[in-house]
Amino acid sequence: MISNLTVFFCLIWALTLLSGEKFAFWLPPYWTCSWPMDTIHKPGDYVKIAVVADPQLMDRTSLNLAPKSLALEIVQFYTDIFMRRAMLASIMPFKPDMVLFLGDHFDGGPVLSDEEWQDSLNRFRHIFDIKTLEKVTNNQVYFLSGNHDIGYAAYHSRKPEVISRYEKAFGSRNYHFRAGEVEFVAVDAQTLDGHPQQKQTSASWTFDNNVSRDSLSPPRVLLTHIPLYRPDRTSCGSKRSSPVINQRISRATGDHEIMYQNYLTKETTNKLLDSIKPILVLSGHDHDQCTVTHIAKHGAVVEQTLGTISWQQGNLYPSFMLLTASKLTFSNASDAVSTHLCLLPAQTFIYIWYILLFVVTLVVILVWPTNGLNIHLHIGENMRNMLGIFKSNTKVKDEDENCEYEMVWDAEGSMHLIKKPLKIVPSHSNERVERGNTTMRSAAKKQVMQEINVSMPQDVSGQLGPVKTKSNVRFVIRRLVRVFLVLSVVAAVNVPIYIMLLFTDWIDK
Image 1 (cartoon, one colour):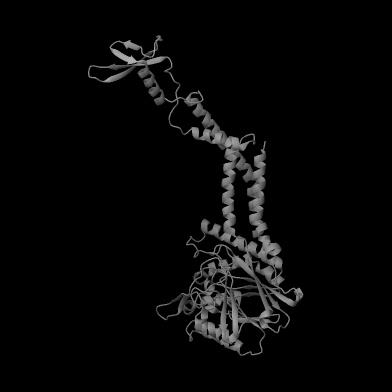
Image 2 (image 1 turned 180 degrees about the horizontal axis):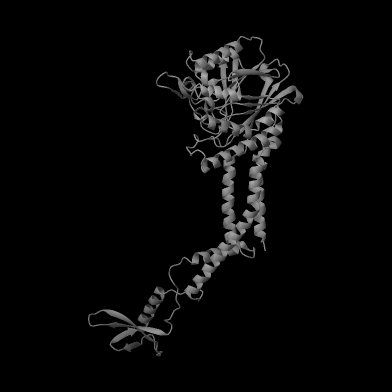
Protein backbone atom coordinates (compact mmCIF):
# COMPACT_ATOMS: atom_id res chain seq x y z
CA MET A 1 0.00 0.00 0.00
CA ILE A 2 1.42 3.39 -1.02
CA SER A 3 1.43 5.90 1.84
CA ASN A 4 0.29 9.49 1.62
CA LEU A 5 3.91 10.58 2.16
CA THR A 6 4.99 8.64 -0.94
CA VAL A 7 2.24 10.21 -3.04
CA PHE A 8 3.18 13.65 -1.72
CA PHE A 9 6.82 13.33 -2.77
CA CYS A 10 5.86 11.85 -6.14
CA LEU A 11 3.82 14.98 -6.83
CA ILE A 12 6.44 17.37 -5.46
CA TRP A 13 9.19 15.86 -7.61
CA ALA A 14 6.99 15.78 -10.71
CA LEU A 15 6.15 19.48 -10.31
CA THR A 16 9.79 20.31 -9.60
CA LEU A 17 11.03 18.54 -12.73
CA LEU A 18 8.35 20.13 -14.89
CA SER A 19 9.26 23.55 -13.50
CA GLY A 20 13.02 23.17 -13.88
CA GLU A 21 13.04 21.39 -17.22
CA LYS A 22 10.05 22.99 -18.95
CA PHE A 23 8.14 25.82 -17.26
CA ALA A 24 11.28 27.87 -16.44
CA PHE A 25 11.96 28.33 -20.16
CA TRP A 26 8.43 29.63 -20.72
CA LEU A 27 8.97 32.63 -18.44
CA PRO A 28 10.66 34.96 -20.99
CA PRO A 29 7.99 34.76 -23.72
CA TYR A 30 5.02 34.81 -21.34
CA TRP A 31 6.09 36.82 -18.29
CA THR A 32 9.50 38.51 -18.12
CA CYS A 33 10.38 39.70 -21.62
CA SER A 34 8.80 41.47 -24.58
CA TRP A 35 9.66 43.31 -27.77
CA PRO A 36 10.87 46.86 -27.05
CA MET A 37 8.40 48.56 -29.41
CA ASP A 38 6.94 52.01 -29.04
CA THR A 39 3.25 51.58 -28.16
CA ILE A 40 2.28 54.46 -30.43
CA HIS A 41 3.19 52.53 -33.57
CA LYS A 42 1.89 49.22 -34.85
CA PRO A 43 3.97 46.03 -34.51
CA GLY A 44 4.15 45.87 -38.31
CA ASP A 45 6.19 49.07 -38.29
CA TYR A 46 9.19 47.21 -36.89
CA VAL A 47 11.54 44.41 -37.89
CA LYS A 48 11.94 42.04 -34.95
CA ILE A 49 15.44 40.61 -34.44
CA ALA A 50 16.56 38.06 -31.83
CA VAL A 51 20.25 38.34 -30.89
CA VAL A 52 22.31 35.45 -29.45
CA ALA A 53 25.96 35.51 -28.34
CA ASP A 54 28.70 33.03 -27.46
CA PRO A 55 27.14 29.55 -27.49
CA GLN A 56 30.70 28.09 -27.48
CA LEU A 57 29.70 24.47 -27.92
CA MET A 58 31.87 22.44 -25.57
CA ASP A 59 34.40 20.01 -27.03
CA ARG A 60 37.60 18.22 -26.06
CA THR A 61 39.36 21.58 -25.59
CA SER A 62 36.87 22.87 -23.02
CA LEU A 63 37.55 20.82 -19.88
CA ASN A 64 40.53 18.71 -20.98
CA LEU A 65 38.31 15.63 -21.10
CA ALA A 66 39.20 12.73 -23.35
CA PRO A 67 37.51 12.83 -26.78
CA LYS A 68 34.47 10.55 -27.04
CA SER A 69 34.61 9.91 -23.27
CA LEU A 70 31.41 9.43 -21.29
CA ALA A 71 32.18 12.46 -19.10
CA LEU A 72 32.58 14.70 -22.16
CA GLU A 73 29.39 13.33 -23.73
CA ILE A 74 27.40 14.08 -20.56
CA VAL A 75 28.78 17.62 -20.26
CA GLN A 76 28.05 18.31 -23.92
CA PHE A 77 24.52 16.93 -23.72
CA TYR A 78 23.46 18.98 -20.69
CA THR A 79 25.03 22.13 -22.11
CA ASP A 80 23.46 21.59 -25.52
CA ILE A 81 19.99 20.73 -24.19
CA PHE A 82 19.88 24.00 -22.23
CA MET A 83 20.63 26.08 -25.33
CA ARG A 84 18.19 24.07 -27.45
CA ARG A 85 15.43 24.67 -24.90
CA ALA A 86 16.37 28.34 -24.75
CA MET A 87 16.06 28.60 -28.52
CA LEU A 88 12.86 26.58 -28.96
CA ALA A 89 10.96 27.52 -25.79
CA SER A 90 12.27 31.01 -24.91
CA ILE A 91 13.26 32.71 -28.18
CA MET A 92 11.19 31.21 -30.99
CA PRO A 93 7.79 31.94 -29.35
CA PHE A 94 8.58 35.62 -29.96
CA LYS A 95 8.47 34.85 -33.71
CA PRO A 96 11.46 36.99 -34.75
CA ASP A 97 11.83 38.16 -38.34
CA MET A 98 15.61 37.74 -38.12
CA VAL A 99 18.10 35.96 -35.86
CA LEU A 100 21.63 37.24 -35.32
CA PHE A 101 24.50 35.24 -33.77
CA LEU A 102 27.33 37.40 -32.43
CA GLY A 103 30.15 34.85 -32.77
CA ASP A 104 31.93 32.09 -30.85
CA HIS A 105 29.66 29.35 -32.10
CA PHE A 106 32.28 26.75 -31.11
CA ASP A 107 34.82 26.54 -28.31
CA GLY A 108 37.92 25.06 -29.91
CA GLY A 109 37.15 25.98 -33.51
CA PRO A 110 40.67 26.97 -34.64
CA VAL A 111 42.34 23.80 -33.30
CA LEU A 112 39.72 21.17 -34.09
CA SER A 113 40.34 18.70 -36.87
CA ASP A 114 38.02 18.81 -39.86
CA GLU A 115 36.07 15.84 -38.52
CA GLU A 116 35.70 17.38 -35.07
CA TRP A 117 34.78 20.75 -36.54
CA GLN A 118 32.09 19.15 -38.71
CA ASP A 119 30.70 17.35 -35.67
CA SER A 120 30.48 20.66 -33.79
CA LEU A 121 28.80 22.27 -36.79
CA ASN A 122 26.18 19.53 -36.88
CA ARG A 123 25.53 19.99 -33.17
CA PHE A 124 25.21 23.75 -33.64
CA ARG A 125 22.68 23.37 -36.44
CA HIS A 126 20.70 20.88 -34.36
CA ILE A 127 20.73 22.89 -31.13
CA PHE A 128 19.43 26.05 -32.77
CA ASP A 129 17.30 24.20 -35.33
CA ILE A 130 18.87 26.19 -38.15
CA LYS A 131 16.83 24.54 -40.91
CA THR A 132 13.53 25.49 -39.30
CA LEU A 133 14.92 28.88 -38.36
CA GLU A 134 15.86 29.66 -41.95
CA LYS A 135 12.36 28.69 -43.12
CA VAL A 136 10.61 30.78 -40.47
CA THR A 137 12.81 33.84 -41.06
CA ASN A 138 13.03 33.44 -44.85
CA ASN A 139 16.79 32.75 -44.63
CA GLN A 140 17.41 35.88 -42.58
CA VAL A 141 19.83 34.26 -40.13
CA TYR A 142 23.17 36.06 -39.77
CA PHE A 143 26.45 34.97 -38.19
CA LEU A 144 29.51 36.83 -36.92
CA SER A 145 32.91 35.17 -36.67
CA GLY A 146 34.41 34.90 -33.19
CA ASN A 147 37.87 34.22 -31.86
CA HIS A 148 36.78 30.69 -30.83
CA ASP A 149 35.64 30.11 -34.41
CA ILE A 150 38.64 31.31 -36.42
CA GLY A 151 41.19 32.53 -33.89
CA TYR A 152 43.08 35.82 -33.99
CA ALA A 153 45.45 37.26 -36.57
CA ALA A 154 48.31 35.00 -35.43
CA TYR A 155 46.32 31.92 -36.52
CA HIS A 156 45.36 33.21 -39.95
CA SER A 157 48.85 33.27 -41.45
CA ARG A 158 49.65 29.78 -40.10
CA LYS A 159 46.30 28.06 -40.69
CA PRO A 160 44.46 29.79 -43.55
CA GLU A 161 42.19 26.72 -43.87
CA VAL A 162 40.45 27.81 -40.65
CA ILE A 163 39.08 30.86 -42.49
CA SER A 164 37.97 28.92 -45.55
CA ARG A 165 36.04 26.23 -43.65
CA TYR A 166 34.30 28.89 -41.56
CA GLU A 167 33.19 30.88 -44.61
CA LYS A 168 32.03 27.70 -46.32
CA ALA A 169 29.60 27.03 -43.46
CA PHE A 170 28.63 30.54 -42.32
CA GLY A 171 29.36 32.88 -45.23
CA SER A 172 31.35 36.09 -45.43
CA ARG A 173 32.97 37.52 -42.32
CA ASN A 174 32.50 41.16 -43.39
CA TYR A 175 29.06 42.12 -44.71
CA HIS A 176 26.07 44.39 -44.16
CA PHE A 177 22.31 43.93 -44.43
CA ARG A 178 19.19 46.02 -44.12
CA ALA A 179 16.37 45.67 -41.60
CA GLY A 180 13.67 48.27 -42.10
CA GLU A 181 15.30 51.68 -42.13
CA VAL A 182 18.38 50.45 -40.27
CA GLU A 183 21.60 49.10 -41.75
CA PHE A 184 23.59 46.49 -39.84
CA VAL A 185 27.35 46.37 -40.51
CA ALA A 186 29.19 43.21 -39.42
CA VAL A 187 32.99 43.25 -39.21
CA ASP A 188 35.51 40.49 -38.53
CA ALA A 189 36.93 42.00 -35.34
CA GLN A 190 39.61 39.28 -35.00
CA THR A 191 41.51 40.67 -37.98
CA LEU A 192 41.21 44.42 -37.42
CA ASP A 193 44.24 44.77 -35.14
CA GLY A 194 46.47 42.51 -37.24
CA HIS A 195 49.42 43.66 -39.33
CA PRO A 196 48.19 46.05 -42.09
CA GLN A 197 49.89 43.95 -44.77
CA GLN A 198 48.26 40.74 -43.57
CA LYS A 199 45.72 39.52 -46.10
CA GLN A 200 42.74 39.12 -43.80
CA THR A 201 43.39 42.42 -42.00
CA SER A 202 43.67 44.29 -45.28
CA ALA A 203 40.39 42.77 -46.53
CA SER A 204 38.53 43.83 -43.37
CA TRP A 205 39.69 47.44 -43.59
CA THR A 206 38.91 47.58 -47.30
CA PHE A 207 35.35 46.56 -46.47
CA ASP A 208 35.18 49.24 -43.77
CA ASN A 209 36.40 51.92 -46.16
CA ASN A 210 33.83 50.94 -48.78
CA VAL A 211 30.99 51.15 -46.26
CA SER A 212 32.15 54.51 -44.96
CA ARG A 213 31.98 56.10 -48.43
CA ASP A 214 28.18 55.93 -48.44
CA SER A 215 27.32 59.28 -46.92
CA LEU A 216 23.57 58.86 -47.50
CA SER A 217 23.31 55.65 -45.54
CA PRO A 218 20.45 55.04 -43.08
CA PRO A 219 21.07 54.71 -39.32
CA ARG A 220 23.64 52.02 -38.70
CA VAL A 221 24.27 49.37 -36.07
CA LEU A 222 27.86 48.11 -35.82
CA LEU A 223 28.22 44.37 -35.12
CA THR A 224 31.55 43.19 -33.73
CA HIS A 225 32.33 40.08 -31.73
CA ILE A 226 35.14 41.74 -29.76
CA PRO A 227 33.95 44.80 -27.78
CA LEU A 228 35.33 48.23 -28.54
CA TYR A 229 38.05 49.78 -26.42
CA ARG A 230 37.19 51.01 -22.95
CA PRO A 231 39.51 52.22 -20.16
CA ASP A 232 40.32 49.77 -17.40
CA ARG A 233 37.72 49.46 -14.62
CA THR A 234 35.02 51.06 -16.76
CA SER A 235 31.62 50.43 -15.18
CA CYS A 236 29.36 48.06 -17.11
CA GLY A 237 26.07 49.00 -15.47
CA SER A 238 23.71 47.20 -13.10
CA LYS A 239 23.01 44.20 -15.33
CA ARG A 240 26.52 42.79 -15.10
CA SER A 241 26.92 39.85 -12.70
CA SER A 242 30.72 39.34 -12.75
CA PRO A 243 33.74 41.63 -12.22
CA VAL A 244 34.79 43.88 -15.09
CA ILE A 245 37.65 42.50 -17.19
CA ASN A 246 40.43 44.94 -18.04
CA GLN A 247 42.25 45.14 -21.36
CA ARG A 248 44.73 42.36 -22.10
CA ILE A 249 46.59 41.79 -25.38
CA SER A 250 48.92 38.85 -26.10
CA ARG A 251 51.17 38.86 -29.17
CA ALA A 252 53.28 36.18 -30.83
CA THR A 253 57.02 36.42 -30.20
CA GLY A 254 58.01 36.29 -33.87
CA ASP A 255 55.75 38.49 -35.98
CA HIS A 256 53.99 40.18 -33.03
CA GLU A 257 50.59 39.20 -34.39
CA ILE A 258 47.75 39.14 -31.89
CA MET A 259 47.07 35.83 -30.16
CA TYR A 260 44.45 37.14 -27.73
CA GLN A 261 42.72 40.40 -26.79
CA ASN A 262 39.77 41.38 -24.59
CA TYR A 263 38.92 44.57 -26.48
CA LEU A 264 39.88 46.22 -29.73
CA THR A 265 42.61 48.81 -29.45
CA LYS A 266 41.78 52.46 -28.95
CA GLU A 267 42.98 53.40 -32.45
CA THR A 268 40.86 50.71 -34.12
CA THR A 269 37.84 51.69 -32.04
CA ASN A 270 38.06 55.35 -33.00
CA LYS A 271 38.55 54.49 -36.66
CA LEU A 272 35.47 52.24 -36.71
CA LEU A 273 33.27 54.77 -34.93
CA ASP A 274 34.38 57.64 -37.18
CA SER A 275 34.01 55.72 -40.45
CA ILE A 276 30.78 53.76 -39.86
CA LYS A 277 29.10 56.33 -37.56
CA PRO A 278 26.83 53.83 -35.82
CA ILE A 279 23.92 54.76 -33.54
CA LEU A 280 24.43 51.51 -31.62
CA VAL A 281 27.18 48.89 -31.21
CA LEU A 282 26.45 45.24 -30.41
CA SER A 283 29.23 42.92 -29.23
CA GLY A 284 29.84 39.64 -27.42
CA HIS A 285 33.05 37.88 -26.35
CA ASP A 286 32.84 39.03 -22.70
CA HIS A 287 30.21 36.42 -21.67
CA ASP A 288 28.52 38.99 -19.45
CA GLN A 289 26.33 42.00 -19.94
CA CYS A 290 27.97 45.39 -20.27
CA THR A 291 26.63 48.78 -21.36
CA VAL A 292 29.09 51.61 -22.04
CA THR A 293 28.95 54.91 -23.89
CA HIS A 294 31.66 55.91 -26.38
CA ILE A 295 32.30 59.49 -27.42
CA ALA A 296 32.87 59.74 -31.17
CA LYS A 297 33.15 62.71 -33.52
CA HIS A 298 29.49 62.41 -34.52
CA GLY A 299 28.31 62.15 -30.91
CA ALA A 300 27.76 59.61 -28.11
CA VAL A 301 27.39 55.95 -29.11
CA VAL A 302 26.04 53.26 -26.78
CA GLU A 303 27.63 49.82 -26.94
CA GLN A 304 25.76 46.84 -25.54
CA THR A 305 27.80 43.70 -24.91
CA LEU A 306 25.53 40.68 -24.72
CA GLY A 307 26.09 37.83 -22.27
CA THR A 308 26.46 34.22 -23.33
CA ILE A 309 23.45 32.00 -24.00
CA SER A 310 25.23 29.01 -22.42
CA TRP A 311 25.08 28.22 -18.69
CA GLN A 312 28.56 26.64 -18.84
CA GLN A 313 30.53 29.73 -19.88
CA GLY A 314 31.07 31.46 -16.55
CA ASN A 315 27.82 33.44 -16.37
CA LEU A 316 25.18 32.27 -13.89
CA TYR A 317 22.56 34.27 -15.76
CA PRO A 318 22.53 33.40 -19.50
CA SER A 319 20.67 35.82 -21.73
CA PHE A 320 19.58 36.85 -25.19
CA MET A 321 18.40 40.14 -26.69
CA LEU A 322 15.26 41.28 -28.46
CA LEU A 323 15.90 44.16 -30.86
CA THR A 324 13.49 46.13 -33.02
CA ALA A 325 14.52 48.12 -36.08
CA SER A 326 12.00 50.65 -37.31
CA LYS A 327 10.55 50.60 -40.81
CA LEU A 328 9.70 54.29 -40.38
CA THR A 329 11.99 57.28 -40.66
CA PHE A 330 12.79 59.09 -37.40
CA SER A 331 14.06 62.62 -37.07
CA ASN A 332 16.31 61.34 -34.29
CA ALA A 333 18.25 58.41 -35.75
CA SER A 334 18.90 56.83 -32.34
CA ASP A 335 15.15 56.19 -31.94
CA ALA A 336 15.17 53.81 -34.91
CA VAL A 337 16.54 50.96 -32.78
CA SER A 338 15.38 49.65 -29.40
CA THR A 339 16.71 46.73 -27.38
CA HIS A 340 15.55 44.59 -24.47
CA LEU A 341 17.83 42.19 -22.59
CA CYS A 342 16.09 38.94 -21.59
CA LEU A 343 17.42 36.57 -18.92
CA LEU A 344 17.20 32.80 -19.26
CA PRO A 345 16.74 30.34 -16.36
CA ALA A 346 19.71 30.07 -13.99
CA GLN A 347 20.43 26.40 -14.66
CA THR A 348 23.04 26.16 -11.90
CA PHE A 349 20.48 27.14 -9.28
CA ILE A 350 17.97 24.64 -10.70
CA TYR A 351 20.45 21.79 -10.17
CA ILE A 352 21.24 23.06 -6.66
CA TRP A 353 17.53 22.99 -5.88
CA TYR A 354 17.32 19.38 -7.10
CA ILE A 355 20.11 18.41 -4.67
CA LEU A 356 18.51 20.24 -1.73
CA LEU A 357 15.13 18.69 -2.46
CA PHE A 358 16.70 15.22 -2.51
CA VAL A 359 18.28 15.84 0.92
CA VAL A 360 14.97 17.11 2.33
CA THR A 361 13.14 14.11 0.87
CA LEU A 362 15.63 11.69 2.44
CA VAL A 363 15.49 13.30 5.89
CA VAL A 364 11.71 13.60 6.00
CA ILE A 365 11.16 9.97 4.99
CA LEU A 366 13.72 8.87 7.57
CA VAL A 367 12.16 10.66 10.59
CA TRP A 368 8.49 10.80 9.61
CA PRO A 369 6.36 8.73 12.05
CA THR A 370 4.56 5.68 10.74
CA ASN A 371 1.12 7.08 11.49
CA GLY A 372 1.99 10.41 9.95
CA LEU A 373 0.67 12.36 12.99
CA ASN A 374 2.32 14.51 15.64
CA ILE A 375 5.68 14.46 13.93
CA HIS A 376 7.15 16.94 16.40
CA LEU A 377 6.59 14.41 19.20
CA HIS A 378 8.22 11.55 17.30
CA ILE A 379 11.36 13.02 15.78
CA GLY A 380 13.30 13.18 19.05
CA GLU A 381 12.31 9.65 20.03
CA ASN A 382 13.18 8.26 16.58
CA MET A 383 16.58 9.90 16.60
CA ARG A 384 17.34 8.52 20.10
CA ASN A 385 16.36 5.04 18.97
CA MET A 386 18.58 5.22 15.90
CA LEU A 387 21.54 6.58 17.87
CA GLY A 388 21.07 3.97 20.62
CA ILE A 389 22.73 1.24 18.58
CA PHE A 390 26.01 3.15 18.61
CA LYS A 391 26.37 3.12 22.40
CA SER A 392 29.38 1.00 23.28
CA ASN A 393 28.67 0.35 26.98
CA THR A 394 26.49 -2.71 27.61
CA LYS A 395 23.92 -2.11 30.31
CA VAL A 396 23.53 -4.93 32.81
CA LYS A 397 20.98 -5.56 35.48
CA ASP A 398 22.06 -4.57 38.96
CA GLU A 399 22.86 -7.75 40.81
CA ASP A 400 24.01 -6.02 43.94
CA GLU A 401 20.62 -5.52 45.51
CA ASN A 402 21.01 -8.54 47.84
CA CYS A 403 24.77 -8.38 48.35
CA GLU A 404 27.20 -6.53 50.57
CA TYR A 405 30.92 -5.78 50.29
CA GLU A 406 33.58 -6.04 52.94
CA MET A 407 37.00 -4.42 52.91
CA VAL A 408 39.79 -6.90 53.66
CA TRP A 409 43.49 -6.17 54.03
CA ASP A 410 46.01 -8.85 53.23
CA ALA A 411 49.43 -9.35 54.78
CA GLU A 412 51.06 -6.91 52.35
CA GLY A 413 48.64 -4.15 53.29
CA SER A 414 46.53 -4.23 50.10
CA MET A 415 42.79 -3.71 50.36
CA HIS A 416 40.23 -5.98 48.62
CA LEU A 417 36.44 -5.91 48.36
CA ILE A 418 34.73 -9.21 49.10
CA LYS A 419 31.08 -9.61 47.95
CA LYS A 420 28.94 -11.68 50.30
CA PRO A 421 25.19 -12.34 50.60
CA LEU A 422 23.49 -9.65 52.57
CA LYS A 423 22.58 -10.53 56.15
CA ILE A 424 19.94 -8.25 57.52
CA VAL A 425 21.09 -7.12 60.94
CA PRO A 426 19.15 -4.52 62.91
CA SER A 427 21.40 -1.58 63.41
CA HIS A 428 21.36 1.99 64.59
CA SER A 429 23.13 5.00 63.16
CA ASN A 430 26.09 4.59 65.56
CA GLU A 431 26.31 0.72 65.39
CA ARG A 432 29.50 -0.98 64.29
CA VAL A 433 29.42 -4.27 62.34
CA GLU A 434 32.14 -6.87 62.89
CA ARG A 435 33.36 -9.12 60.00
CA GLY A 436 36.37 -11.19 61.05
CA ASN A 437 39.33 -8.90 61.31
CA THR A 438 37.55 -6.18 59.32
CA THR A 439 35.53 -3.40 60.85
CA MET A 440 33.18 -1.29 58.69
CA ARG A 441 30.69 1.44 59.60
CA SER A 442 27.24 1.39 58.01
CA ALA A 443 27.74 4.83 56.52
CA ALA A 444 31.03 3.75 54.90
CA LYS A 445 29.40 0.62 53.51
CA LYS A 446 26.57 2.70 52.05
CA GLN A 447 29.06 5.06 50.36
CA VAL A 448 30.99 2.14 48.85
CA MET A 449 27.76 0.65 47.53
CA GLN A 450 26.86 3.97 45.89
CA GLU A 451 30.28 4.16 44.18
CA ILE A 452 29.94 0.61 42.91
CA ASN A 453 26.47 1.36 41.57
CA VAL A 454 27.80 4.38 39.74
CA SER A 455 30.50 2.32 38.05
CA MET A 456 27.89 -0.27 36.96
CA PRO A 457 25.14 1.77 35.21
CA GLN A 458 21.63 0.48 34.81
CA ASP A 459 19.27 1.04 31.86
CA VAL A 460 16.75 3.68 32.86
CA SER A 461 13.93 1.69 31.34
CA GLY A 462 14.69 -1.33 33.46
CA GLN A 463 15.36 -3.52 30.39
CA LEU A 464 18.50 -5.41 29.62
CA GLY A 465 21.06 -3.57 27.44
CA PRO A 466 21.42 -6.15 24.66
CA VAL A 467 17.66 -6.35 24.24
CA LYS A 468 17.42 -2.59 23.91
CA THR A 469 20.27 -2.56 21.34
CA LYS A 470 18.60 -5.22 19.25
CA SER A 471 15.39 -3.20 19.34
CA ASN A 472 17.26 -0.13 18.08
CA VAL A 473 18.87 -2.12 15.27
CA ARG A 474 15.49 -3.46 14.16
CA PHE A 475 14.07 0.07 14.27
CA VAL A 476 16.85 1.48 12.10
CA ILE A 477 16.57 -1.38 9.62
CA ARG A 478 12.81 -0.82 9.31
CA ARG A 479 13.42 2.88 8.72
CA LEU A 480 16.06 2.27 6.06
CA VAL A 481 13.83 -0.23 4.31
CA ARG A 482 11.02 2.32 4.29
CA VAL A 483 13.36 4.98 2.87
CA PHE A 484 14.42 2.60 0.12
CA LEU A 485 10.83 1.66 -0.74
CA VAL A 486 9.56 5.25 -0.81
CA LEU A 487 12.52 6.48 -2.89
CA SER A 488 12.05 3.57 -5.28
CA VAL A 489 8.42 4.53 -5.88
CA VAL A 490 9.26 8.22 -6.27
CA ALA A 491 12.05 7.34 -8.73
CA ALA A 492 9.84 4.92 -10.64
CA VAL A 493 7.33 7.71 -11.21
CA ASN A 494 9.67 10.64 -11.87
CA VAL A 495 12.69 9.18 -13.69
CA PRO A 496 10.55 8.38 -16.76
CA ILE A 497 9.12 11.90 -16.60
CA TYR A 498 12.64 13.36 -16.51
CA ILE A 499 13.88 11.21 -19.39
CA MET A 500 10.77 12.05 -21.41
CA LEU A 501 11.35 15.78 -20.86
CA LEU A 502 14.99 15.50 -21.92
CA PHE A 503 14.52 13.55 -25.11
CA THR A 504 11.27 15.23 -26.14
CA ASP A 505 13.16 18.52 -26.22
CA TRP A 506 16.25 16.98 -27.84
CA ILE A 507 14.74 15.18 -30.81
CA ASP A 508 13.88 17.10 -33.95
CA LYS A 509 10.38 18.45 -34.09
